[in-house]
Length: 375
Image (spheres, rainbow, N blue to C red):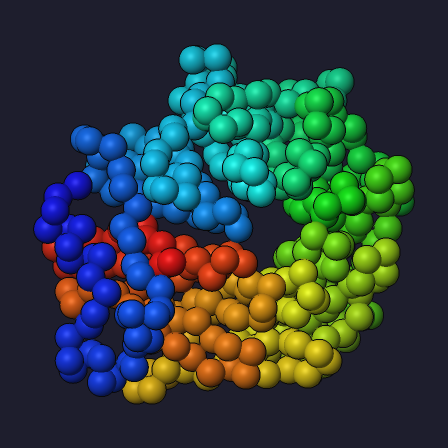
């Protein structure tokens, strides 16, 4: 990592022409962009997850096809996530707990994936597979280290919950279904995911309580539903089929079933929910925020037209991009560009934590895409 690259990407002010166009926040009081470091001999970093402590999970690459799964601590020090038993080569990271524990999967010498968690030192712990199942992946983990995911016997995929001790519980199927997967777990240990019939069609969003009882979150008269995010308290958001093959944005309160979000008609979905029940989503490709029973469209930056939003913090701020610029939106839908360097051609943010830190990437013609954090 050269000093030129750091200086180029970590600069906190823009050129005068750019500053006039996108009105960046005051660098003296706003966030500063930091390049995620990578080891000597590597050429880039990619990041996917950030928790409220500022720990980050992603990978670094040597530019020759070798990737190393990595956790960055709050001071941006690097911890490689080790493979299983020294025989595997693949590490897949899926979730990051509040204390920095990582969940996902890693293969062994037989190239079979197994559900794994990694501790603070980057050491893996293989999670148990249910009897008769040969591979697995942990998709999410909560603060108590309860994990959920999927296991397969090479014929059918089934939802699994793992306790803190790593022991597996196979979660039951709803009637007339043959496949399932758990995608999220809340702070109570309640799991959320999908189940489908034996042909893999007509997936429906489901919830498994801590006793294993399964409940369909329902539809709006259609044949399918999906869950796309769950908050710590168990509020789930997603979309569900409606008459005429439409997709309507949906929210399910803890222990409840899907209800339509206000204005969430036609082609709509919700894909992020915070711990106050605010939801982020889209209606006919327009990104919107649902808050206090009202729907607010997100507005683009001046002199830009397109925008994307990806994540939401507990204050209701959304993060994404407008035009070619990483952007945050307030609860009224007003955008603010995140500051970058004068030679950055393109940037976006895709994760925001409750400390106001934004994870994303920035790109220059000289160095290509690099993972960054604004804080």
